Image (cartoon, rainbow, N blue to C red; front, side, top):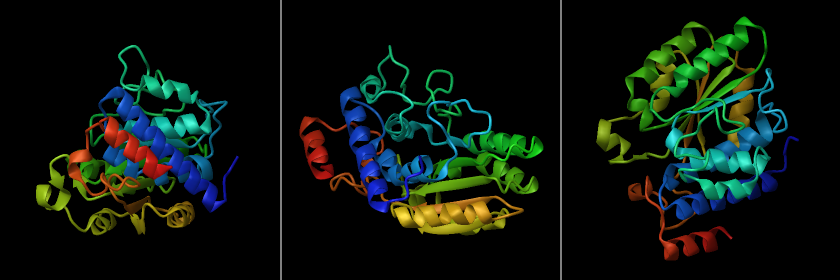
Length: 272
């Protein structure tokens, strides 16, 4: 069922953030910062935009989602469990060697995961293939691909972007989680990465820049992408790394670090 109430979508995204922190805390490892920054985007995709059915996760005409920045799997697992693909109890198995919810998502083990990811830079290539298949078969489904801003320093991303435009994949929507931080610090200092919107525009994309933690703006951008014909769309979603937890926000050291008990309790208290 499509959720249209903005306050309900905000409530869901807050639940995702709590589940993200719980997963990483229990596992004592994981990537909370980038998972928290994209929680609003995943909420809108799975509860407001995508044509999906949790009771039939392999439906041939379903929309597809590729989490190219696969290390942010806690966010994907949180939204899948919230949607009902599997019980929330399984989130406690995150990064447990005997469980299926490993550090990177596995399409062969987890219902609702459309692509196994983890090696950065490769997700857009896979999304291209899905979108092209949809067009060639006249299936009509859409494909969404979430990239990290540090990830787009990978050259394969831009080779794939050329392909997206060449085949006029207007059923493809790329979303860049532009939280400005990666494992080594600020993206501009690490690689001089700026004007992300201009780069995608130069590669032939329809481009939209939004506040990626604003539910209304995310919905409007995705609706605009659906109406765009003849070219793919890239949404540059400006987000806050660690969004929702004061001591994690805009702090690069929370890229891949688990909270201790005191930090966990404080985080949950803030989210409550």
